[in-house]
Length: 124
Image (cartoon, rainbow, N blue to C red; front, side, top):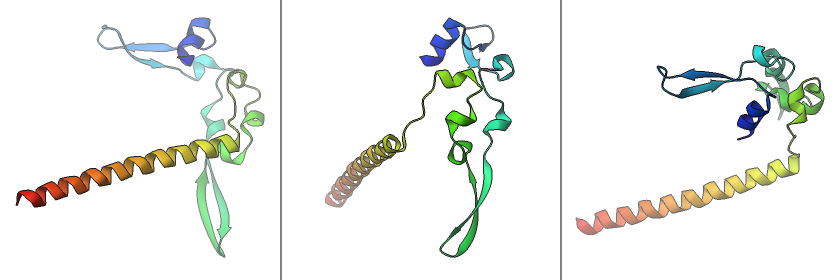
């Protein structure tokens, strides 16, 4: 919905790809069409980082927003007027809620599995 409203307002330009001329199949937002609004891909690449954990040295790839402050890193691009950075506390709360939901689903699946197993044993 947000992207659609941005396109209607002329904030961002999109290109549509039709399926053999029958309606819209895909909508693309090209960086070159939206210079000044979207940052170049190179600016958003992850980086390899070395760290020490338990006396051992490891190398891992980190996303750009884990290394730098997104607000500062993208301050020169218009997209930052329309985005917000989620505070760490809110992210943690979201992750915990997601984990609780996943655990509930897992418990339900286990109960169903046990019930099916009991039915199979009862039939034999």
